[in-house]
Amino acid sequence: MVEKILTVKNRAGIHARPAAIIAQTANKFASEVTLIKDDTSVNAKSIMGVITMAAGYNTTLTMQVEGPDESECANTIWELFESKFEEE
Picture 1 (cartoon, rainbow, N blue to C red):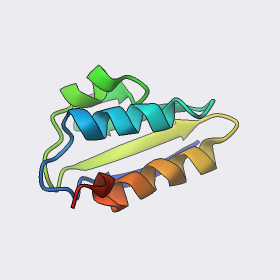
Picture 2: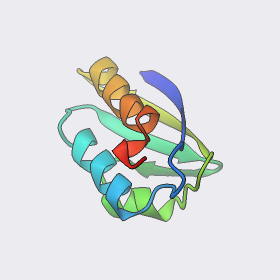
Picture 3: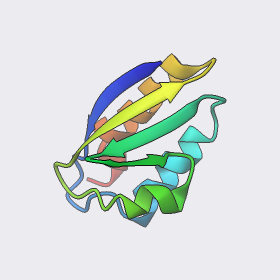
């Protein structure tokens, strides 16, 4: 299992567009992807799950990825967060 700490760097936070990008990206991989905020964990392959986390600007999330392509998957999603979902 790969675990990474993600920070929401885009000012608008995780709204519909970034949630869709996260879910679409996660769905390209065979691995299971879980996002954790406080005591809440959601399947990152679910757009609604990601939106319900209500992750605003500067929120820290833990991402856990487990499966055959976990490293590539974790790095790809991490890069989305680092690029601010190309919104800024």
